[in-house]
Amino acid sequence: MTMEVPFLRLVGLSKHFGGVRALEGIDWDVRAGEVHCLVGENGCGKSTLIKTVAGVHPPTEGTIEIGGESVVPLSPARAKALGIQVIFQDLSLFPNLSVAENIAVECHLESALKPVRRARMRRIAQDVLRRLDFDLDPSALVSDLPVAERQIVAIARGLAAEARLIFMDEPTASLTRAEVNRLLAIVARLKADGIAVVFVSHRLEEVVEIAERVTVLRDGRKVGTWPVGEVDQRRIAHLMTGLDIDHGVAARDMGAAEPLLVVDRLSRRGEFADVSFTLRRGEVLGLVGLLGAGRTELALTLFGMNRAEGGTIRLAGEPLVLRSNRDAMHAGIAYVSEDRLSLGVILPQSIEDNIGLAVMKGLAGRSGFIARRRRSELARDWVRRLAIKVPGIDRAVQTLSGGNQQRVVLAKWLATRPSVLILDSPTVGVDIKNKQGIYEIVAELAREGVGVIVISDEVGEAFATCDRVLHMRAGRIVGECVPGRITERELEERIYA
Image 1 (cartoon, rainbow, N blue to C red):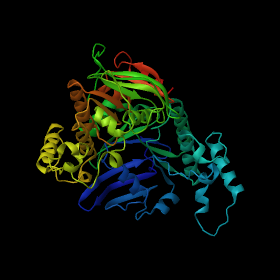
Image 2: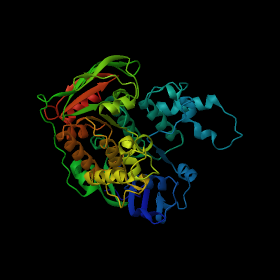
Image 3: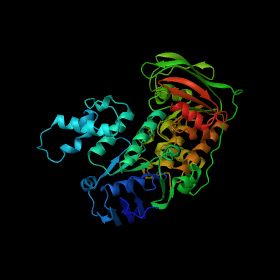
Image 4: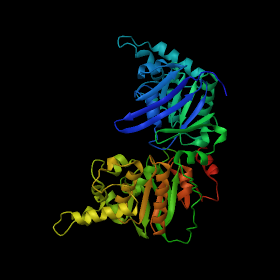
């Protein structure tokens, strides 16, 4: 253990928003040239910690030290001047500007009257890219770049601003394995230059390849910091939740089950092509692949939101033509969107209102008006069945946690009594404990004979819930596997190849 002063040190840091304690008594440090992993469930305080260090939120209590000197009060401008840069998951780049303009943007924020010197911007961009040993055209528009190269632009922008500590929020979420390797090589280069990097990530298997220490947050408090060699993924999950969660493999042999949904050579120009598969009654079928593989586009077509341009769909042996989502709902197909906040629920409205949305016609009496008692009974029934933790069904959905919001979305669609349920990234924004609860709901639905399609970015999730897994790439199904007959690692290598 080195005794030299760390680059960043938090001492007794607390942050309260009214009566809510987002951070409490955090003691934490990051050393110069260190790669440090910051993990925790959603809502544990990771984002608040980063924004406090970046000067966005002033601490309620405690101090922030850079090089042993207190820097409180700290503004975003002062944080950047001290060398603190944050690369959020959306990268916060200007897509309509060039690579050089994005990298050197800080040089032109000092004065609105300063003339734009494009030659200087290009020179700055070339110097920084050369430092990263990365070949990229400075004149290329950022909107034309793949995600991996946009990541490099964001890192280069931080270096051009003389970063000494870079926070990276989920930097590998949408990268192939080869792109991840390239990013980790760049991080190693930053480390060699004495620049500290803090990863906020759920892909622990990648982070442990390069991180030196791991810090776990839970409920706004620091659980502890460990050398990465002293903790594995299962131990970290326990530290994050306080629970011993072992998903195992859930796959069952469903070969003898009745075919429920048969898709044959389904195509939609620019999105997917020649997609064929069979979903059996009571089967949980996984659909994995990189972002942009066409999974969500396929799901939207199966739910009637988009029209297929070729191929056929059969449901329970009968041809199915989907002109709208109403056709899909009438046929018994339900779809839980990845974006539950804007497409899954009406946040300001009550739990009761939301659960009844998809079955309003069935709740109407002879007069055509909604029968309030029937709607309330329906909502209470599903709140009980899905163990939604709420003080009352009259509460607005926006007051609930992410896990309970997702359960309300599930309740809304399960109230339609579907025979096919499509779940698009069902646990995004949901903590580990609530993930387990959703997995149990999926298993129960399958036992009741519902055919379930689970679209997931997490291989571990597919292994925990699915009987079979289809691998999609560039709009086509390129492989099929059964969890247990193939390892998670082997499937990950195929996906990120």
